[in-house]
Image (cartoon, rainbow, N blue to C red; front, side, top):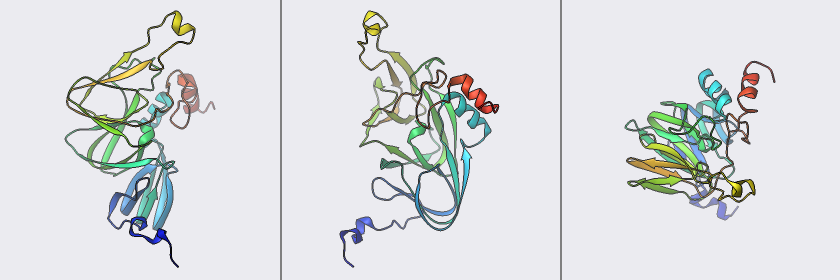
Length: 248
């Protein structure tokens, strides 16, 4: 049988650990365990076991319910090859060496080594009533993480005041100082529907980097219940508490 599909660029990667398989897929040469986004498995070989973890522990589960942010996780263990993808988005690998943490939009997390730990935190400078969806996952430790972006991203070196749309900012150095800037002033124009469409902007200062994708995710309003998709809150604070207490 002959086909261009049998060319070397389509062959399975053979390296251990979390690797890129082409540009839109991740392959994990597994000898132990890895954490991955729930539902991201597209294929596997070998003897692997899949366990749903929710948001990765009760504390983070509660935070995800209250904020609408987090990573719906599964733990994959065993020996074999695991292939992951998320809506054909571009895959990128980042190695953390313990010198700095990495803040990531939960919607962009694909897989990470079990040596890394993460928490859900509010972006510094973001008010609790902000509708910009400013809760993100902070990863620390030593290990590799695979993230996704919609389209080819730009990596901005923060050596001067830097700003990004909250829904386009994928990841940034946790050591950066962040803030939230309101761009649209509320007035008659706002009431008539005349806005810039850039209500809030994330500001970054210090030394580090910011990864910005070529697409804006729908805004997630954790406490106002205006989010959508799997990263959205379930009816805001009241709905989240109701869900936690078995009221839904």
